[in-house]
Image (cartoon, rainbow, N blue to C red):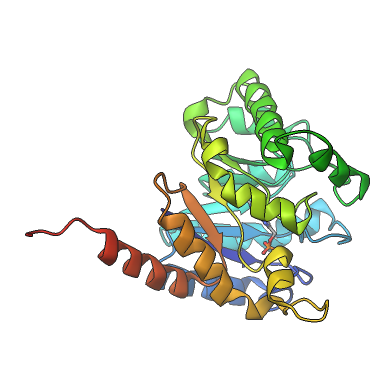
Amino acid sequence: MLVMGVVNVTPDSFSDGGLWDDAESAIAHALQLVDEGADIVDVGGESTRPGATRPLVTDELGRVIPVIEALAAAGVTVSVDTMRAEVAERAIAAGARIVNDVSGGLADERMLPVVAASEATYVAMHWRAHSHNMADFAVYDAEDGGVVSIVHAELQARVESIEAAGVDRSRLVLDPGLGFAKKPDHDWSLLRGLDVLAGLGLPLLVGASRKSFVGRLLGDRGALRPPTERDDATLAITTWLALQPAPVWGVRVHDVRGTRDALAVVDRLTRPPLVE
Ligand SMILES: Nc1nc2ncc(COP(=O)(O)O)nc2c(=O)[nH]1
């Protein structure tokens, strides 16, 4: 299971906005995550939390490109977290080897041609435009099999479009998009239904870290547990994922050190004994 560390170079991300919205501190934080055991660093310049105002492309580029250049030059495997083709293109040129597109190619019609023209790995996440329209959620409950079967079908459709655009499936990773156009119950159902999504035959990336469905579980009297106090519960999810018969390709996390600790424990307890 790969560990993808999150570096949001944004002033307004939901869990760590503004902590390192300048290149120098973002680079330092990313290198620290690598020291703590991150296999990949995911650099994002646009907050995806509900209601966030979109930065200009120039602002998003200004945030992520200097960070990606420095990290790639330092030998770090970098993914760029962007919905914009221009940002993906410039990030690949700067050394990013993965394009992490929360829209799965739906937000920018130029994205798939850009990815097709590259050798980058493409993470396509399940997403719905205008995903915070409450009406979107009802459909998950209306149909039998619920959210898992609908996300499976919608991801399958994305895979077909992505392949048709010339991106070989060997470069594809899928992601259920926890917290995007879903209610908390849907997120928990998707975690429990990852084996169904694995039936798509592609690696899965899971981004549960600090998400609001975790905050709601831990909160009391209706209040959400604050994002920075959700890491322990996130580790429990990561541990549970690592114990599944077919563990996912990777987890996208803020707490890399804790994740590595949890995976070390799982490995020690599940590793076949050298001698009986
Ligand atoms: N592939 C993928 N990318 C993502 N990017 C941002 C966020 C929002 O969380 P953040 O604000 O902590 O980055 N979540 C995901 C996710 O779940 N999967």
